[in-house]
Amino acid sequence: MAKDKDYRKLINTGRWRKLRRSVLTAHPLCERCYDEGYITPASEVHHRRPVEYGVDYAEKHRLMYDPGNLCALCHDCHVKVHTEMGRSGKEAARRRNAEVVDAVINRFFNDG
Image (tube, rainbow, N blue to C red; front, top):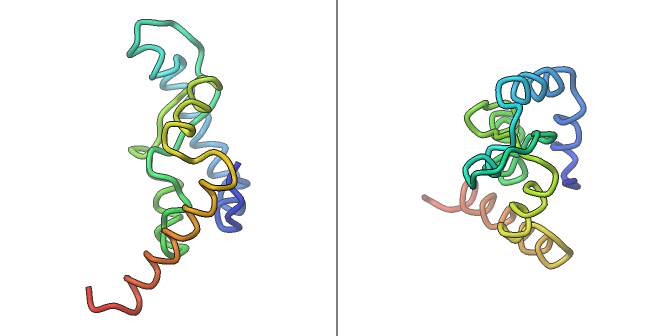
């Protein structure tokens, strides 16, 4: 699970639990397994664009609750997706933190 304090705050809300339940109800099968020809129950909801990539709370809020940013996965596929995204381990966490710092600097201190 992510260690970003805004993410932790957003993921522990009734709104998230309701949205998560609706995603899993609408997509009871793992979307990745299904695409590969397997039938596996979905048990987790994945954010395609990670919430922590938002440079401010408003953007994180949008990423958290955007149904288009979500997909239903089984646990194994969720782990695989995060591994493939390079989002596992301490080095990945350091890299993500550096990317967020760069995004904030570019957004608020550069002319672009």
